[in-house]
Image 1 (cartoon, one colour):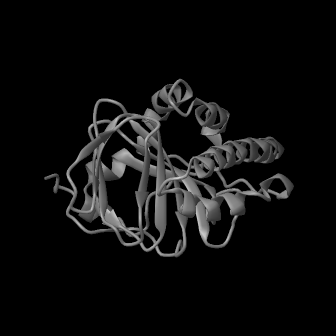
Image 2: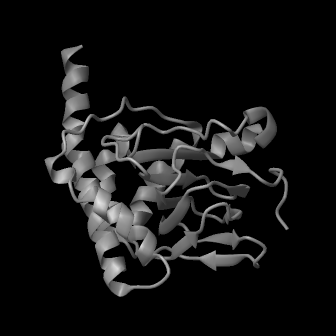
Length: 223
């Protein structure tokens, strides 16, 4: 039991290292400006106090999609956002991977349910909780369609690994490589479709973060 507790406690500095890397990324984006900057300021401000935080790492959990995590992290470590990829690598075995509670496996289908997972770094199921802000990572298996979904929180994605097709509202599908930034304003439907590589993406929610995502298109819809 002591060994489990010690390993659990040892994850705290790894979470803090990852959150510092996220903060540095967001600060650089804010200096650069653009559409994501106003949304990232709120998240950056929430991250300012993590160095003094007393983190409580969650109990690690895994999902079927985690079989693709090693490849995704390897790609992220040598990708456009390699500093964050390096910070996430030692944290891999300490993350609490989960699925959205509104995604009923009988409705989204077993294939999607096994191909999708996310883990929070900052948030109620992460290591530090901040009101009105969530930061986490999304993992999608290769050749996976993530149907159109929406949520009341604003969302900013940074693609860490895997070129995938993304769709925002009714706009055309666009291939987005590692390093891409994407903004989804509140309640805006968006969808993804991965190619030969798994997708690993950092996400930041701000605003109404307590209400989970919900599907707005059936899992088979990819038009």
